[in-house]
Image (cartoon, rainbow, N blue to C red):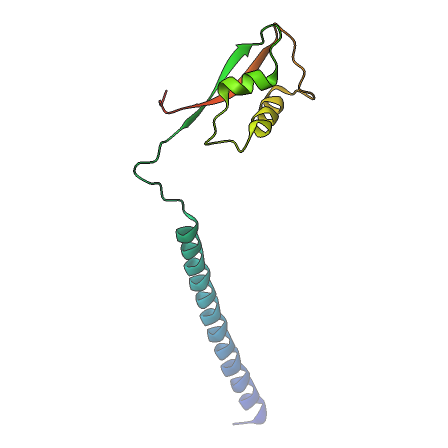
Length: 120
């Protein structure tokens, strides 16, 4: 066997070993990613208590009455379980209706979110 043939044979063996190594590393990486993903989802999932109250979010269209403010509306539709405070609720109402300030006019209509235990 000539030196050229040995070099070709050795290069072929080296490429085969490197290909095997790359395949093994790829399979290992895929298994690791899947394992970490499944573990992360299992840890991050929120199990509900069987006695927990399920609230469904709905929207309704209301007419603003004379002297009524967003704070009055929030007082009627605010849900303690879903909002940290009244400001968050009012911010959502403003965002839904495209309002830039808390001022509303009597006779105007607003879309407001509310929660109910009843599935409609």
